[in-house]
Length: 100
Image 1: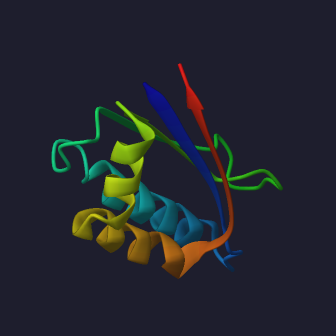
Image 2: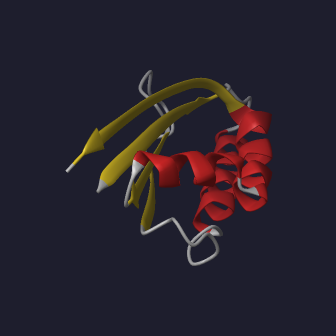
């Protein structure tokens, strides 16, 4: 199994409620992939506990049977739709893939 974990940092917002709304939109877009992509075995999206932090804001944790399945997921049209949502707000990204 492959664990594909991605962290996102979102842009600054004037109002905390705007940042919260952006984070919820990102979470909804990513969680909308659950059960929609055959290769995606597990998906979890967690938001940082505070809106005021220098840390990353969103953690996406996904599991796949193989790296080949991660590659299929990456180009899947539904995943690409979620990427468009994330890109509206993200200013930073970090990723790690590992076997478990």
